[in-house]
Image (cartoon, rainbow, N blue to C red; front, side):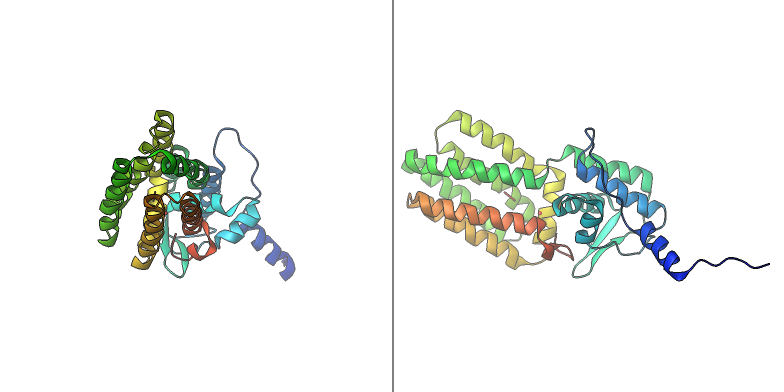
Length: 268
C-alpha cells in the first residue's frame, strides 16, 4: 500500500500556520493586552512553544495579531510577573519550566485587567504635568519651591543608592509637591488619581525590569529630573516644559522601544 506523502511546501505552510498567531478581534469585555496574553498561553499549552523554548520577537507577534507593540509588551510583562515567561537580557523571552497554565494564565489576565496601561498613563501624565508645572511656576511662593527641592533631594538620594522601591515611592511625593505648589485643590486631586496608577503591578514590574539592567539608566533619569527642578527653581517655564517633555519621551522609550525587547523591559 502506498502511503500518501504531503509535499514539502504544504508541510512548511502547515507548520507556519500552527506557529503563527491569529489576528485579534475586538472585545468589549477584556483589554487587548489580556487577549494577547491568552493567545500566547494557548500556544504554550498546545506545545507550539514548549518549556524552555523562545517566544517570537514582540514585533512579529504584533504583526501577526494585527496589534500594537505596546499591547504585546504589556501582555508579555504580565506573563513574566506570574512566572509563565522569563526574560533573558540580550536574548529574548522564554517559556519557564514551572508552568501551571490555567491558574497562572488567569493571574496574568488579572494583572492586566487591574492595571492601567502604562502607555495610557504616560499620555495622561504628559498632558497634565506640563500644565501643572506652568501653573506652579507662575503662582508658587518660595516655600513651595523649597518643598519641591527637598522632595527631589530625598528621591535623588534613593536613586543614587539603587533603592528602586523607595525611588518609586518618593517619585509620587516629588510630582505631588509640584501639584501642591499650584495651590489648586482640583489639580492636586487629579494628579493624585493619575499617579496612583504608577503603583499598579504592571507599571512597577516594567520599570523595575528596565532599571535592573544597569545603574546608568537610573542616572539618566536622575539627570533629567535635575533639569526639571532647576528650571522650576529659576521659574523658567519654557525650560521646565522642555525638560518634562524629554522626561516623558524617555519614560515611553524605556517601557516600549525595541531595545527593551531582548532583556530590558518599567517611575514617576
